[in-house]
Length: 151
Image (cartoon, rainbow, N blue to C red; front, side, top):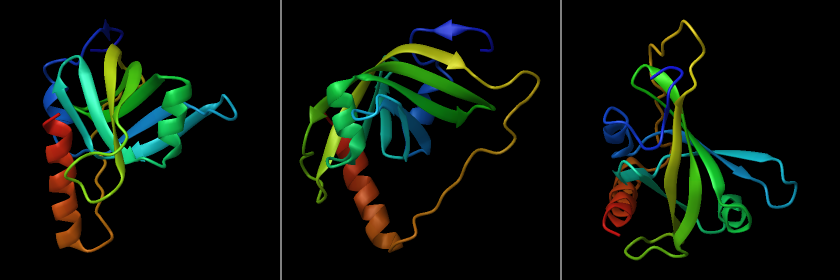
């Protein structure tokens, strides 16, 4: 996909965003108008044109999107790094069926670019582990991802 701009997720990228995954999200900071980058993991792409994610509804991400909906999500996978730009919309301030106060946000995908530097390939994707109670983390992950999927 190098040097190519797509207007939706490719068939190779869609399944990568249909499971919990480490990604970064760049928003425009509502106070400084500068970039604000956060790591998030509760993401789900219901189809090639949209990506949903859940974040604490007190997160700076939520207010940033209220003020300026343009965002960029960065995804590492499929041997490369991808930039997914679009407009975000807060679908719900408080997700139903989830014990935490999470906002549900959806990005309408406008542009997908392979942004990996020339002549290289990702040989190992980022991995992370939850540092709190594994059983509680697994239960919460299931609840959040089910709520994100079923809207």
